[in-house]
Image (cartoon, rainbow, N blue to C red; front, side, top):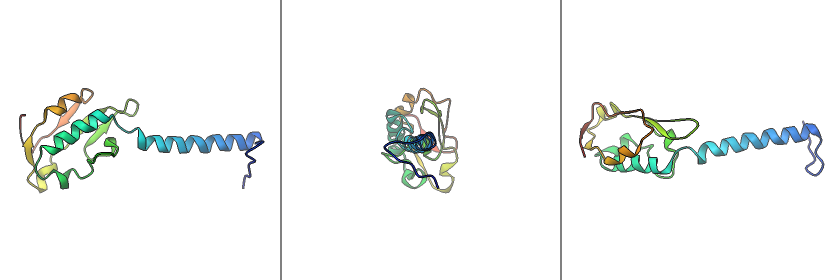
Amino acid sequence: MLHCKLIHPNSHCAMANLILFSVITLFLLSFCCGCIEKEAHALLLFKAGLSHSADLLSSWEKGTNCCLWDGISCDETSHHIVGVDIAGFSLSAEMEGVISESLCTLTSAATISLTGMGLTGG
């Protein structure tokens, strides 16, 4: 076991502390900086316009990392949403509603797949 003095760390302890600090920082950043807030808001507005979305899109909750939501893909560097794929999510339940104009704010999204859902234009 490596015992490090915090006041006068030797080179081994300094390296161990640096590695530990880096791992903890990366872990915390993965939760706090997961997506762009205005893009998460746009998805939540879209969800609000759907019936029966609470069960099918239950991972889509305010204050959570939208890059971890079901059907959402994000760029690992910019954290922008690059894909929305909820095609077929409504197969087990009737999900219908209006396609919210808020989806237009997802300018980095290369694909938005809503196939098989009972949606109309907004």
